[in-house]
Length: 312
Ligand code: UDP
Ligand code: MG
Image (cartoon, rainbow, N blue to C red; front, side, top):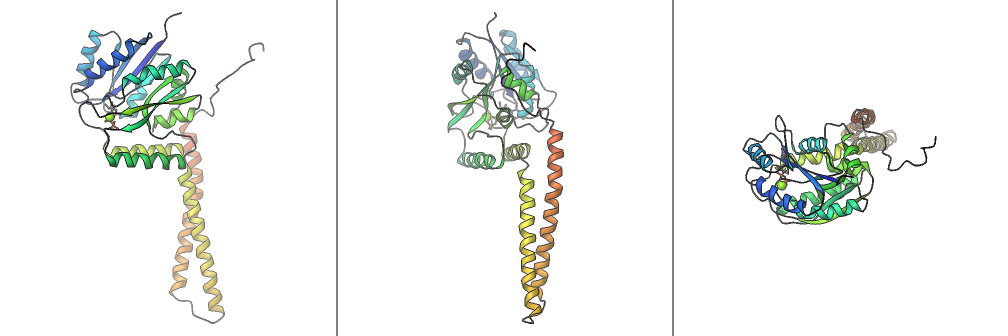
């Protein structure tokens, strides 16, 4: 039997300043593990010399591979392309900027050997990130868990090791709006965490400004939850109920001759109408949510075992 193969997927966008050091550190970490390995660099339409540098790394090192996307497609798509190309029995996803330390990979691989399918890196510290990023990340992961059905572990990014079957399971999810850490949580199987300290960027600048972070956060919620649609319906029902009750009170008072139908009645009717419209939107949302789920076209379930069927 040949030695197991470990694939490492490294998305890179304008990383010319750091990619050589990344390759050096990755090689140092991987070469001592006693497994065969390949490092798949995915050049996500970089506008600098990233692709050229990877190409020269490749000439000197048979472990290195280069995938070049035709334009910048974004981090999640770049990783997806790498997953599609990875041939390993296990696949590591790691950023190109050394914020995810390659030295953690052997420990992740140990967990994989113990039988885990997804070994995600959990940040025990965020040296490189601003207080603002830390706070928003903290709030986001907690809000996300409240909103979604898949248990997406807090304080984890995309740095992780996944088994062949976990990688294939996510590859069978054809949705365009990809929130990979959610998708890996969604597939199930045995999952565990390895702690690491998230360091500073080795070189260059973040490609995740607030705008992209918000977009990713929205993907996380919308891809894994139709609960916001339910919230609209609930709000509408509450408003319609309150408006109706208020109208009833005003009507009773008017009939009893205690006061006329004043401006309050108008206000109550407006709340009533707005509530009805929101409730109706919630109903439409119920259908939209189902259409959305069908359009995502995810497999209904994954099997972790199948035994005793052979003698049929
Ligand atoms: N990246 C990418 N395409 C993009 C943006 C980023 O492939 O459009 C890569 C980038 O080169 C890095 C990883 O995704 O390897 C994470 O990006 P970055 O470090 O900028 O994000 P941060 O760590 O600040 O969240
Ligand atoms: Mg980074």
